[in-house]
Amino acid sequence: MEKMNLSNSQLQLILAKANFSPSGDNSQPWSYVWNQVSLQIFHNSARAQHPLNPQGIASMISLGMLLTAVQIAASEFGFSTTYQLGQMNPENNDFWAQVHFIQTQEKISSLADVLETRSTDRRPYISGNLDRKRLKEPLSQQSVFFPATWHSCGPPSSQLLDYISNAEQLLTDDPHILPATLKWLRFTHSQVQKTKDGMHWSNMGVKFWELPSIPLIRDFPMALKLLRPIVKSQNKFRIEDQLKSSSELICVSIPDSTQSSLNKSTIVKAGGLMMELWLSLNKMGFGVQPLTIVSTFAFSIKHGLSPASTKWKHFFETGEALLKNEFSIATNNTPIWIVRTGKSPGLSISMRTLRMAPILKIIE
Ligand SMILES: Cc1cc2nc3c(=O)[nH]c(=O)nc-3n(C[C@H](O)[C@H](O)[C@H](O)COP(=O)(O)O)c2cc1C
Image 1 (cartoon, rainbow, N blue to C red):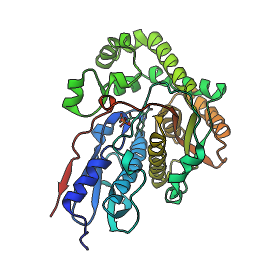
Image 2: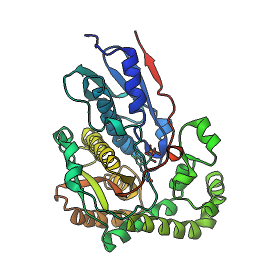
Image 3: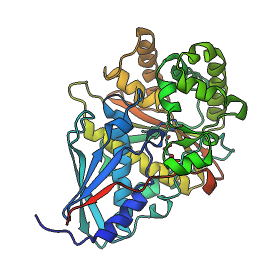
Image 4: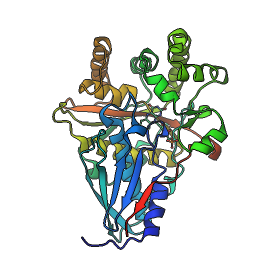
């Protein structure tokens, strides 16, 4: 196969930037092999294992974001990218994607300067309307992500707010989700510096006085049974505050499929599209926070990829009709990922999540 003109050091610089791409709980489940022809991206299923990531669906979204980040970072060196996907089976160790770099005369992506500063902002936002037209401008290449499409719905209606805040209660109703998430919570800045993964508690919208209960629930999941009523009501206040302060909710949808015909490549595209939206929103001074339970996890339940009680199945089924109505989503499409957004001063450097150095093997 023909060698690429991309040098090892250029590849390393591209990865150093793309590495700031987000992953669930900042778990950073990726590693890379560069064989001078293509960049192979591998998925670490142990790091990605999470009840909210059944069959690697959330990882597929994450991969889409990473591929878009690689493409944007490569544009700074005069390269465009193409990719092929692997089987994306969370159980085996095959590569999930293979990227090729092609020399191009195209301009540097206008989103390149936000790759390293993009962040998840879980604080309440400040007032200010989103200029949707401006948001569309950097997305001129939207056809790249077809058939994934995006929709926005303005500030959430009271019905939508209730639905999302009730959906978020799954966090405390389910005995596994909260402990799995708390595993990634870091309590001190020195812990953050040491692991360079996970999230510092101060970024999570957690109140100082809630802190002592966190290691308790993390280390003794039985404690969640006792503390559930308090944690639940705190969680409800938090999500309602977050939603009420949001000027817009944004949803990415994909064509309907069944479990047997699940179109993984479209899920990856949905992630890629959301990455462009997220970068554009941050560039415009808007904060972004994903709402995964009500969207990606509901999608996984609908497709039988995650066990759920009849109560929750029914809840999400009814909710999908509401989401389609609020976001004006075509009947043959299904929501796959929702984020909330609103004007925000942006996180200070000390509040941003860190990244481990990319795990890269170079074959000469
Ligand atoms: C697929 C996916 C799902 C996520 N779901 C949530 C979520 O439900 N709630 C939330 O607050 N953050 C969520 N996040 C944000 C991650 O926790 C965040 O990206 C990660 O900690 C890195 O932080 P950063 O985005 O500030 O770089 C999600 C991110 C990804 C990629």
